[in-house]
Image 1 (cartoon, helix red, strand yellow):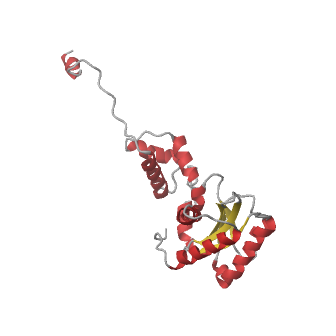
Image 2: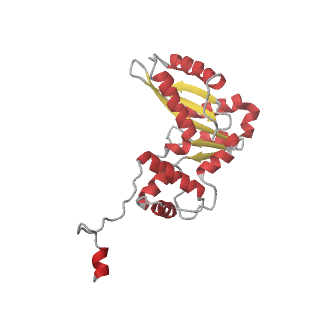
Image 3: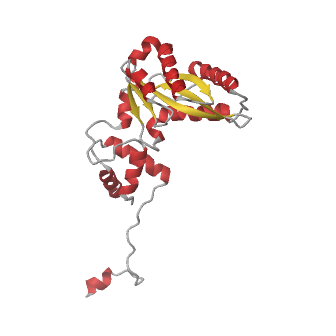
Length: 239
């Protein structure tokens, strides 16, 4: 039929399928997280559908992995706020903890426990030890409570990972002043991103540039930097 013949490509080849857009990994991750946060009730298939509508091909399982790693519930119905929304709304009532590993010039592994207040980004160095026992970790929680004094009662949540160095008595000290412990998901460092970021800063700006001799040297170095960080160092705007 003339109409059919005229609809064929002039070169005799079959028409090419429509081009599918591809996203660089970093851009893909950013777009998925933004869509998830803007559509609080949409799960991974909703986000995948939004991307497909824009011409981007991505598997729902990939969307699920990215949301899960970011601490966002990938379930189809998120009735509550996202993790990011929760952190933003509760910032002045959140304190986070994490361990920083330090290797001395004598190849000895040290452990520094640090805390950071989300609302003010104020950094606290608990202490440094080669043997972070259960008793030592619990004592650092007591010391922090005494350091913060009345400000401790303004805190509502402690965010930490599932490191075995934290024990029940560590959490109990915070619970005694009304602070609830929130555990980050396994292998999801972004769930404790603010504390993870400051640990990275300590590593880049101090530990990668200096040779640490022992515990006393580590404490002195980190304490000096902490004063600089809290008083003079410009920081990113609070999220």
